[in-house]
Image (tube, rainbow, N blue to C red; front, top):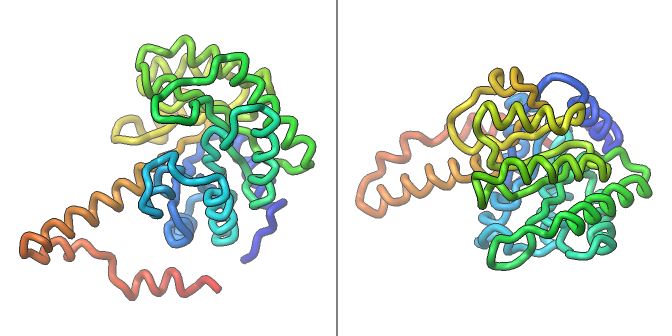
Length: 273
């Protein structure tokens, strides 16, 4: 089945209207196709997962590398892809808008812009500039005529677990600036998630799950609309490979017992043309 970009975007928009869905994060074409094969209705790229495939740390790949990666992911699957577009690869709102236009052209059905400053030390853009950057991204999407979901992220809770109130205030400001979906990675407790859902409603909230804890049903009960995994599936894959390789280095091949059967993988991927 070949799905058009317009159909993917319409399907993605519909997913945000009601219920709760999970969009796991592939790091290459193979993982994207496997996740589609497993029945997920939408996917999201992961900046860290992709960076690691290139031998770089997160936030150490270029805009053009990410754009090519997004084109590859979107072409690989028939389900919508949401782009982790980091901080928009620019500071000034007008430059963010120009880069958003480039991201739209890759075929993504959604994209996120975060408020983390580029550089070695974690710091957020001040609220006024962060809001203007989201407003510029909204204007770029509207001007394109593409039905692309704009996700606005604040990274504050990743660096200060006590920043709930300021994170909620930012999400509310981003919603007013035109974001379709709001996202604050690092929110964890049921009470905090429920407070965030209420604050940004009726717009949907994305919650990141990076370790065991709440279930999909539990998050749905709190009013969460969508759930992403970030780079965690990539870390699971790297963890399994590192463990098996370390065992081989130490003289044992026992770790290879957990390998997926090659024929099973060929059967799955052989259906793709």
